[in-house]
Length: 419
Ligand code: AMP
Ligand code: GLY
Image 1 (cartoon, rainbow, N blue to C red):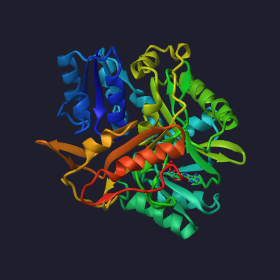
Image 2: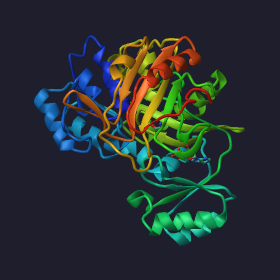
Image 3: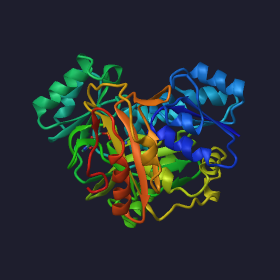
């Protein structure tokens, strides 16, 4: 079978790496990929946003299955294009991917289907927002409606701050189009966590727990990033929490997409707050998490292709994947300056040595092959991942590998998996 993975991050490398291990996958393409994906398959120089180019390539090569990594490709309707041309693609269709790409759409969906979430108001003008703010206490979450690289949320501590942020979003183009509509949301107190589940429209299959570290600095401080590391299993979610998440969130979600006739065959990754009143949804992500995927995939003992195909064929209720009881830790090595400005094209040394360590796998994100060198090419550069009998042994192995990899400006957190 020929498989095409769309995207170029650590998540896509992890998916391609695992799919490559399937005895049924003979060829794997990654568009556009990175220096790491070039080692598990063939990189194709087509951007994740060039949908006609991607479809044309899939038709020329007669690709059997396309796996979509990034949110904006799903939001742009790449799955619709492929499916309407008779090609299988893993991921929700555009109308369902709106659950991630429009927060107001997602909130209306949650309320309609009884999924617990924070109280909210959708505002399209400053006057509307001013009037609505009267109903909130502070702090309040002010959210750009659309996709904003995970940065479109501001927790405003006071009414003047909330009004300023609303004005910036609605009238001054902060977050561009994504901020043309604003969602005000009650501030929830609790433990933040997330789950990953495959959804085929008829049933869902919950993955083991995983969590990322969003903040740039140790001790979970500093600006939010795409994620500085991850580990699995997570120590935040106990079995009773998962029972409630199934009952209060995943089951109503399934019922909701059926009622609303949304075609969802892909991964659902809700961001949650465990509050005193139970779990509440902060957001729906309609794709695999990055870097959560890098910690989950190495724990999967079953063929990933079987799971993706079961999702597309709506028979998730018939598969039971096996997961290792080992823990996984993924430490992200980033370019100095990320998530703001950073330099690229720094040669990376020590990859081969680090990769030889037992139970270590290095997922590439912002890397690029040039002749026989691997260069940095993005903010998040590598996801150094290790398995171990428990979290501390996985951490030890991952950091042992990290210490062997060097590039100019290399930055990483030393406390991944600790808090
Ligand atoms: P989101 O993109 O909606 O997940 O929001 C980004 C971050 O803002 C989350 O990871 C939370 O830490 C925080 N956040 C979002 N909404 C709320 C809320 N209603 N109450 C408290 N914190 C929130
Ligand atoms: N690691 C968070 C995300 O993928 O959205």
